[in-house]
Picture 1: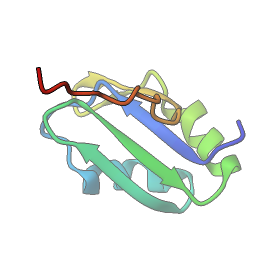
Picture 2: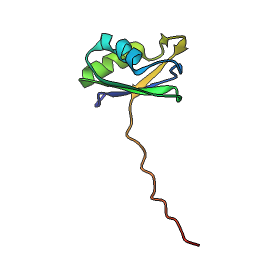
Picture 3: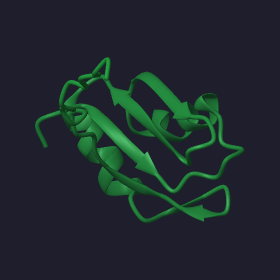
Length: 88
């Protein structure tokens, strides 16, 4: 796995960034943990790709706060075409 940023899906809506950081800190240094409120997912950035791979292997498919979470390498955002507006 080339990156150190992970996508974490199927989170309960009550999960906070702090709780996500606590969960992943058992697998290395967490540089940043961010839950997207009201969406049920978040992102975790580990200090190295090795730590990210270790966390992914250990946590993908496990139960966290009553839900089975999905952990995968984060992909860059999709390019969106520019929107053009017409006066007419």
